[in-house]
Amino acid sequence: MNLTEFQWDNKYATGILNIDAQHQYLFALTNRLLRNTAENASMPIIAVTLAQLDDYVKEHFDLEEQMLREAGYAELAEHIAQHQSLKKRLHEYGQRLLNESLSPIDFARFMQMWLSKHILQSDMKYLPVVKSCK
Ligand SMILES: [Fe+2]
Image (cartoon, rainbow, N blue to C red):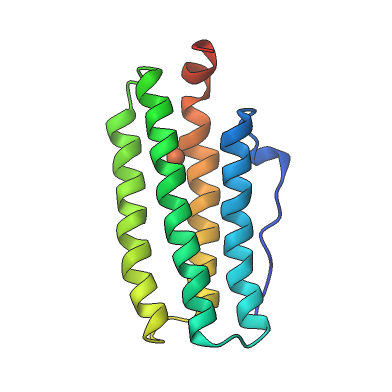
């Protein structure tokens, strides 16, 4: 069983303080799920973590999309589509987690991979546009 926690690394830093703080919190919530598993937490506890993650993902995406809208980001629609796709998968995987057809570890691994790839590839792409507006 691999319980590797998500470690923040400078390569994930966008330099936009609130975005980095929110990304770090998403890492922390994903790690919380791994800790719940390591501590053999009951399903209601895992459900609370899942709900926190779900809420925070929405809050973060809304803020990021608003920032990109204000910056006039040309690839906004594509970026929003990626966010929508994760929200849909989070919902689907969340249901599977709750009915125990998906393990919290597999769920957390999916989140780690998605977040890492999205930050490094898609979020880094909007930086020049957002920073030129500040
Ligand atoms: Fe994003």
